[in-house]
Amino acid sequence: MWLDDLLFINPYKIKNRKKLTQFENDILFMNNFNEKLETAMRRYKLEGLPDTCSERVILQSLIFNGKVAFYEDNGAIFAMQASVSGKGVNINGDPVNAYVFSKNGIINKEIDLFIKGADNSALLKQGTMGYQGSTKPRGVLVYENKQRYPFINTIIYYSKTIADTFRTIDVNRTWLKHPFIPICPETMVNSVEEIFGKIENNEAIIPISTGMKDITELDLKEITGREDAITRCVELIDWYEQKYREACGFDSNSSIDKKGENLVTDEVNFNQSFTDKHTNELIEYLQEQFDYVNEVLGTHITVKEYESDEQNELQPNDASGNSEPESGDAN
Image (cartoon, rainbow, N blue to C red):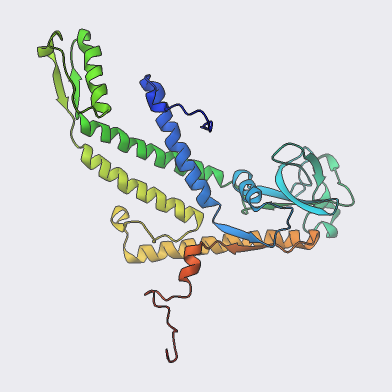
């Protein structure tokens, strides 16, 4: 949902409950999706990019499409989104040709691709229906992982799951304000809805007309266990957040309360070892891809582990926060 800078309509003035519920579902998903996407863009960083390449575009393309194209045009190197063309793939499943396109649609062109090992065998240059490509390929496709699987699918799953759990907390939180279901005749439904609407809006005083008919027929069925449900949802959100961090390759024991997962020390250490290995493999594979880009296009791109400013500030210190030298006389 995008909001105009000069015209903002409060969505919580929506009277239709179904529309308001859908709005709350959508806004929670979008909030979580944006947060998860920002996190995913900090799994690694790229250094040595040509000035004509945008790191943001590269990261977004790798996340959303699983690949990004680097190509040369009039002496400049560009990095753009790409899709495989109808000229197909070679015997190993590597595309021999692709379309690249810019964010504003000005560039939408077809390029032939460099293919590793193709200098030693013409078969590796041959795509569907015998297409051989030009004698001077102009681009390279870089994939984020060996399966060429877009990470966006992981982001969507955890965004939806966590947003749904947040909404479960919202529903239970609302029921804490009126933990019962009213049972009443049809003639009283509108009046009861009005009363509960005022409770929902946190109105301190809710007058009820003595003219309400059949008031003695109003019955309330109590609902219990809402507090426990909220507690379990909070623990579940922590667990999902941690699993997403592990999927990103971040540390697995930095912030989560272990009682929610019931993890012992050995399990925590194992998870940490797994995520460290995952991060190293991700960076190593990407660097292998960029080494080939550097080779054929003359660039000098390297992949590094992303470190926030806070991490950089803490690096010189030991675990206790002591910044004194490890050895030698402090004087």
